[in-house]
Amino acid sequence: MLHDRFQIKFWGVRGSIPCPGALTVRYGGNTSCVEMQVGGERLIFDGGTGLRMLGQSLLSEYPIKAHLFFTHSHWDHIQGFPFFVPAFKKGNEFKIYAAPSPNGATMKQRLHDQMLHPNFPVPLQVMQSRLEFYDLEIGETLKIGDLTVETGRLNHPGEATGYRIQWQGLTATYITDTEHFPDRLDEVVLRLTRQADVMIIDATYTDEEYHDPKSSKVGWGHSTWQEAVKIAKASGVKQLVLFHHDPGHDDDFLDSLGEQASQAFPCTILAREGLSIELAKD
Ligand SMILES: [Zn+2]
Ligand SMILES: [Zn+2]
Image (cartoon, rainbow, N blue to C red):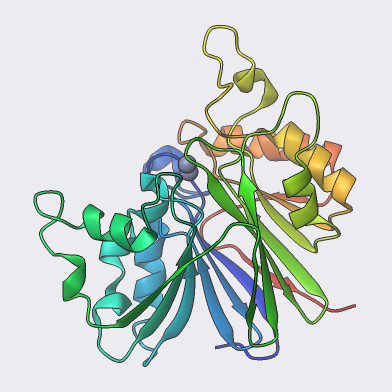
């Protein structure tokens, strides 16, 4: 555990569905999961299939305490949870944060349902770690030690929660599964990303794909790298991290997408599995 540092590690960077294979080796095929070690706390954002590998990496550490934040419960954000081995081990402790869905279903209920027979052979109750669920009210600000976590409602079918994490003057944001508006920048996203050192944001599509008259993605709940650049510029962000890659975008496609995005906003990188970013005080 890193105590006097703010480090981000990417364990899953895809949206929609895992896409392992020869054409996605360099960026990775697992779905959304990002770890932040901040001031002695471990924060995990989303439980896509990348969470399984994060769990494997933690097996040598015991006991584990972590805060697990969910944006929402579409499959690509919860599918790794039943395979998160540390959750099965007594002595580990996880605090799980998520907003109830608009119909009132809590994350506890949704993770439980995901593991019910006949969907899955092992029910949630078999997990021996201490799982403490916290129902977020979107818009509230949490304090965890000397960390601050701000939240905001994202524009996505069934809603999603965006997060802004601040510690000792350093800021990272995790904003995925959000669609931009046609006529204005999203004020919630602008609030969460203001002056951020690192902005991780949904850039599932290109503008061309989004507006493709034969297969429009309007209303699907995702954004484009061009819109991410607009937010980065408007918010004075230091580093833009494009995230939640479309499973149809192979390594070569993402390489060229990254080159175009860097021309529009020089401090741009594409999230890829295994990537670590260290936030530094200057
Ligand atoms: Zn997603
Ligand atoms: Zn979603």
